[in-house]
Amino acid sequence: MPRPPRADEAGGIYHVLNRGNARSTIFHKDDDYDAFGRILAQGLKRYDVEQFSFQLMPNHWHLLIRPRIDGEMSRFMRWITATHTMRYHAHYHSSGEGHVYQGRFKSFPIQDDDPFLTVCRYVERNALRANLVDRDEDWRWGSLFRWVSKPEPDPRLLSAWPIRRPPGWKNRVNAALTKGELEALRKSAKRGAPFGDEKWVTKETKRLGIESTLRKRGRCHPKKENQ
Image 1: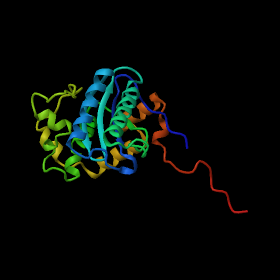
Image 2: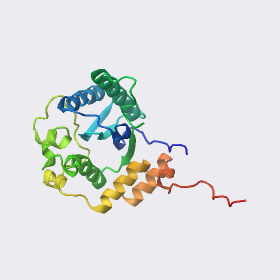
Image 3: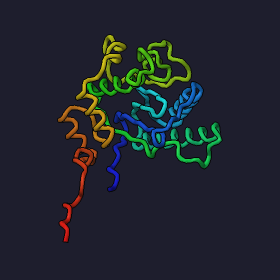
Image 4: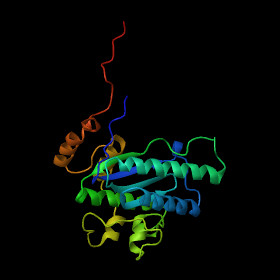
């Protein structure tokens, strides 16, 4: 089945994620997380991209970004994953031993109001959901930790949000998302479908030419009867 087209336009906000090959660990120690943070910082200087939220996990990562030029998200992500793969193999002397990542990154567009806040909460509470910390702001390799550590530690990775951050944000992030919110987010991640209210999603999928991301996946043709 051909891949659906990927939305990647200037001014759009996107949730981007990728995993280690076969869900294998890609960050084995603190230095690995810090090294990836430096790669992110270099990429944000090389490419016209803003980053609003992120979380690095042992075998995957999440970024919430906005490209300022059409196609810039893809260029940014290709550079990030290629650079990290090259440095990973060099550090662990693992060249020729297989892929670091499962494949190309996944992404989906996000409506820039309440849905944006929902995705930020989802991204920033990954470590708590995985029982790696008691409070999400304690996870050093995420945007919530950086936001509460004013001024933001070097290298700086975060841009100002496109909307106002609600009061009591730390507590909102530490509160669990609803089952419906989680299911909707996972569906968008799997299919690359826009995440927002129904009217906005319908409009964006048509405008971007990605209506196929909303269709149920299955057989393209009816199953033939046995002769």
